[in-house]
Length: 194
Image 1: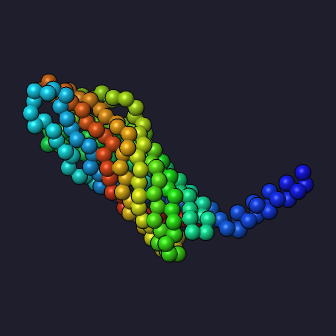
Image 2: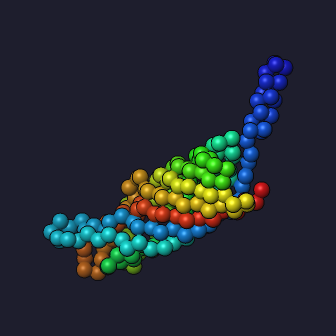
């Protein structure tokens, strides 16, 4: 028993020597383009619109565990998104949890990727809407980060993987769906509080 305890203590001390825990705040801009707006009435030709890219923002917290050349970085973001079509506009507030596994190419430059879990807290469409299915979805992200002391700047691309739609009924009586998963580029700045 004492041997197991000594080995466990040695393992914990070794991990502590090779790892470092960091935490801080993060925020930035996202450039989002949602999925297509489609009619569910087959008789209406050419009723498909693609969203115009709009700028939103995100704020949140992160924690990071460093292991030599690798790191694990979960984040929590409150994200505001906007999509504009020719006929409607869609705004949403999401709670997002990206979890990144990173690799340090150089001491100040790293690349990362991982899943992103999202939950739609609020949605606004300028016509009547009804949510279809879950308000939670999953996506994937990939990016790069440059560390400048306590500050870091990152650029990431994120794409929704699970279908997440809202249905609508317009003034003209045309029913349709809007895919909210979309894709986005994010530029973020983080500050280490550690």
